[in-house]
Every structure is written in structure tokens, then in C-alpha cells.
Amino acid sequence: MRRTPLLLTAALTAVLAGCASTGGLHSDAKTLQADQLAASRSLGHADVSHDWPATDWWTALGDKQLDGLIDEALKNNPDLAIARARARAAEAQAGAAEAATKPTLNAGASVAGARLPSTLVPAPIGGHFSWIKYGYLSFNWDIDLWGGERAAWEAAVGRARAAAIDTQTARLELSANVARAYAQFGYACRQQDLAREQLARATHVRKLTDQRVQAGIDSRLQLQQSTAEQATTEQQLAAADRRVTSARNALSVLLGKGPDRGLDIARPQPLSPASVALPSTLPAQLLGRRPDVIAAKLRVEAASKDIQSAKTRFLPNLSLGALAGLAAGGGDNLFQLPARFYQVAPAVSLPIFEGGRLRANLAGRDAARDLAVAQYNKTLIGALDAIADKLDGVKALKQQAAAQQRALDAAREAWKLAMDRYKSGIGSYLQALTVQRQLLAAEQSAAALHAEQVDLSVQLIEALGGGYRPADDPSNVSPTATAANTDSSRGTP
Image (tube, rainbow, N blue to C red; front, side, top):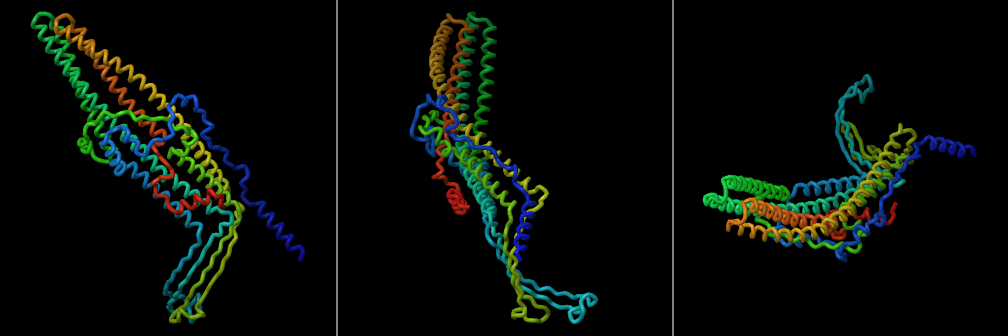
């Protein structure tokens, strides 16, 4: 009798020794922390504020029409609708993963008629047609001893939360794109104005040159040159008109409407670059202000849960099944005590040889986590780099704009003097043409710099998270997801 426990222990040891092993499989990747990324020298020259951008940051640009266009885009844009649909699909997958952790109860009933040959089944059953009727109730429960199913559920919940936050990333990107496209529309209109002004100047010079030729002051060579200059400005105006149409169409696409919608958009008011100061908590709290960074971190956590779930596949598991019902043949009463049947079937399973399937699955989960960590690190590095780059651009453009304004003022004064000299017969056509082109170049540069200032201020706000606050996240995350996240944070197994 004493040998029995020893034999059972030896047998169990032999079986466990033959089980699939997780040896040598692991994920080495580590997530970066914001304080590990040196940025003090790059960001040290910036103005510092205690505030992050507001949720409706675009109102600081000062155009009510833009406010309405962004609201319209947030309702109708297909890309945002796609992000929301993906979030709902991920939430449904989390619900399916939760269902896998719970027991199942099924019921069924059937009536079937059959004639069994008497050569196989002797009479009175064989050789006669008879009915068989039955009903049953079945119960199944995977005990989940090691928490693998729960870990898979928590991983799915993490991915669902990440997908919900992705909608906020899409929302931020869309609002920034509408603001930038609107600024480009305003810039295109300004280019159109400059082209018209240049055409008016060229036409005026053409008339003056014609008069000077009639008076014998200039030759027909100058007249042909002024005619060519007038034709060139007409071509530039046509190109400017095309840019305005393209800008309208770009806005129509972002609004989720056809090209006719762009025709109803009024000319933008001159936009003021949004004044942005860096929050004093940067970069530490960037982790909680950029939706793409938060979503990437959640995917790392979900990948870790996937690894935990995959490891439990290597361990023994216990399941419980039960079946009960009633069955009767012919005209017998189904609802009688002799018609009952039942079965209880607890089962233990242990993987011994899986042909490498379990190890390959775990290796894939390890690689998926390494990938998620790399993507998170890339997102975090890219966020800080974008802030530093846009901030430096805003500072440089402010200096360029001030210098360009001085150049524009000088070019306007030179044009006035050149035209006065040309009208009085003192100056030459070549001088007038040269100053005219300098004035156009100065005006175009000033307009381009202003448009770029607005564009960069929008990009900086986007890089700072665009006013995103996780606590106020309007994304629809299921109560299941919230509960799972709470349990996970408490270390629930």
C-alpha cells in the first residue's frame, strides 16, 4: 500500500517532465520614461505656462466660421467614423473575451423517427418504425485555474480602451487638419489678391509704357516687355484662382461633403497665430496628455496580458461538464422518472506534446509585446521631437515675419518712388519692372510667412495633445472595460 503514493508521484513527475516548456522564451523590451528623454536645452528657451491647450483650442484663432466647420467635420468626417467603428469592434471583442471566462448553460430538444433493420437490432426494436424524443440541459465551465482566460479578457479590454482613445487621436488630427486647411484657404485667397494687385500694376505700367512710346520716350521693345509682363501676371492670377478652388475642395473632403460644400464657405478672416506657451510640467505629464501616447501604453499592457495568458496554456487545466435530460421512444411518456438521464464529467487536461505550437504561440506574444514597446517608445520620442521642432519653428518664423515686414514696407515705398519717377519721365521701364517684381516677392513672402505661422501654431497645439484630458474622455468605454482596468490596477489575479 505504501508503494501506491510513490508510484503515483513518479508517474506524475514523468508526465510533467514531458510537458511543453516555456524555457528560453521572454520579452526583453522596456518602455521609456519621459524623464529619460533629455529635452531641457531644446525647450529651455520657451515661454512657460501652467496651462495646457484648451479642448476648443481653435477658438483662439479668432474665426467663428472655422469653429462651425470643425464642429461639422467632427460630425461627418468618414475617417473619424472609421475610428469609432473600430472602437466598437474592439469593445465587442472584449465582450467576447469576457464571455469566455464564464460558464455556459445550454438546452435542447428533438424528436426523430427511424426504422432500424432487424438484421442489426432484433425485434421488437428492430424491423419497426418508431419515434424517439428527448430534451436535455448541459452545463460547461472552464475553471481557469491559472487565470489565463481572465488575462486574455484584460488584454482585450486594454485593446478596446486603446481603440476608444484612438478616436480621440483621430478627433485631434481632424480638427488640426481642418484648421490648417482653413488657413491654407485664407492663404490661397491672399495669393489671389496679390495676383490681382500685380495684374493691376502690370496693366497700369503697360498703359504708361504705351503712352511713353506714343510720346517717343520709350521704344516698342519696352512696350512688348510690358505686354509680356501683363500676360505673365494674368497666368499667375489663373494659377491663384486654381489654388483657391483646390483649398475649397480640400475643406469639403474634411467636412465629409461633396465639392459644392466648399463653394458655400466664405472667405476666411485673417487668422491670428495661436499664442502657445509650454506647460511647466512638460515632458513628465506628456504621457497623460497625448492620446496616441496613452493608447500605445495601453497596447503594451495588453501585450503583457497576452503573454500571461499564453503561459497558462502550458499548465494543467480543470473543466467541469454536466448533462441532464429526458428521453423516451415510441408512445412512452417523456416526462416520467424512468426517462431521466444525467452525466457529470469533470476533466483535467495537460499539454504534453504540442509539436511546438504552444512555444510558437508564446514566442509570437513575446514578439508582439516587443513591437508594442518599440511603437510606444517611438511615439513618445516623436511627441517630444515634434514639440521641440514646432516650438523652434514658431520662434524662427516670428523673427522672419518681423524682418519681412520691414522688407515689405521698404518695397512699397520703393514702388511708389519708382512709379513717380516713371510717370515724370525720369525713371526707366527696367527700374519700374525691377521694383514691381521686388514688391510682389515681398508681398508673397509676407503672406507665406503669416500662413506658416498660423500652421505651425496649430501643429504645436496638436503636438501638445490638443487639450486632451483622459478624465474628461468622452469615448464610450464599456463598464466591463472599466472594471477590468480597476481590477488590473489593484493586481487582481
